[in-house]
Image 1 (tube, rainbow, N blue to C red):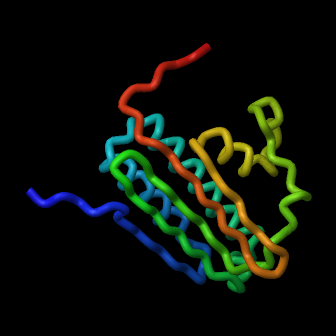
Image 2 (image 1 turned 180 degrees about the vertical axis):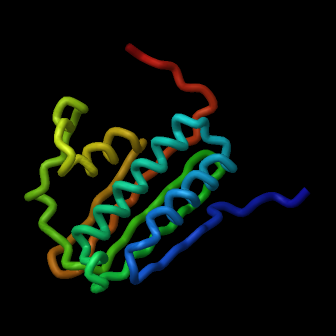
Length: 148
């Protein structure tokens, strides 16, 4: 039997922002095929949706001025996703990231908070004038216990 080489990569590049459903569907398919449970599939779909929506809204993709790149790196024990835009970028020190669910009672400004809470790790890089990239990691867990 032939051993898989890791990471496997699935890559998308868009100039138009109308492909959120394509990204969501592919996130779910990749996560299920890797063996993530349904709660983790939901979490992955939500955080990738948030990252994509932020790239479209804040990276200029809605105006057609930015290119969006979404890369899925598939490892045997984790999924790494990067969402990159070629928009205007921003100063990271000016963006508060909520640390708990109590601060997420608004419908706006909660994307990075959800991403930070639902991913196992994430890294946000942005420089004004040169775009933004968000990298997130979700580890494959066979069993997760609920902790009250």
